[in-house]
Image 1 (cartoon, helix red, strand yellow):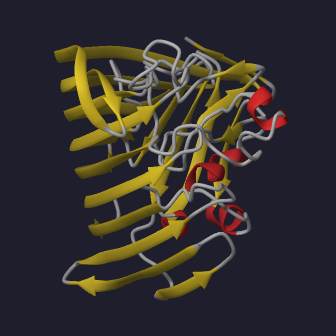
Image 2: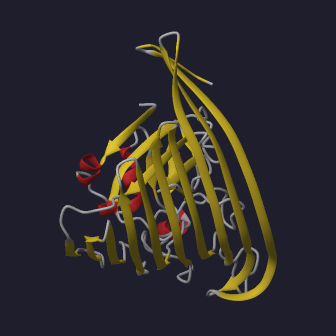
Length: 357
């Protein structure tokens, strides 16, 4: 239950209403949602509310999903860009015991990967209640010494709300990969865009008095829009000196959230709606080398690594009415750089006893 791998065959058997629910294959992890489908999920693990990802590190093909110094919440992890049918496997680790996981991993870490090829193409179209519609086209084919994978997803849903959620999103993936035995690599481009309306929390007294229905809203202009575009590359080489892994990526994200928690408490004329916005360009590199030595009959696994990340961020808080700006509470420009160095030593002393330093 503390660490493990979930195979694609297991993931394919799960019924997924939203992409983040794939992560519930991790024992004890609860993934839910509030204030609209386009927001990052709400995560719960080991008795803790991890907010939108503050303490759960999530990576996809080595790309960090969590966003630091975010305009809404530290560690914001929006997984709406995932296409469940393309996930190859999932590795999970719980607890702050893993040097390579670093930031956001105090409760745990989940690593997902995309497939390089599909056994056969996918063309699916689904309709359902509450305005649900989803279409997916995905296929892979040989291209020289490697393979090309491409996929396109379109989705809409309204939910049960009086004010239709009108959630619309698109996902696109283009990937080239090669596997030459000891060396394999891939280059992947991803694009995501989404917009939605949200029915936020409502006063019990308003429902009890019949002012609004149980699935109604006080401010029907709440909601948001976001997009994410990324380019990443990963290289793995197994040689006489061990295994080398290199991961590079750059991405651009943009988010605008419109919320109103107090309605007309502070401004009886215009209302209390506010907008939290976040726009960033992120670049990162992860490099590690792992090798095994035999000492006194025990296998000693060593890993040394370096991680670099740069974020150029513009975010802030606006006072709004029906998504139109009335005034600026604050605007921030952040240039955040970090470099992490780590070494990890693992020895399997007995069948059920291991030390990790």
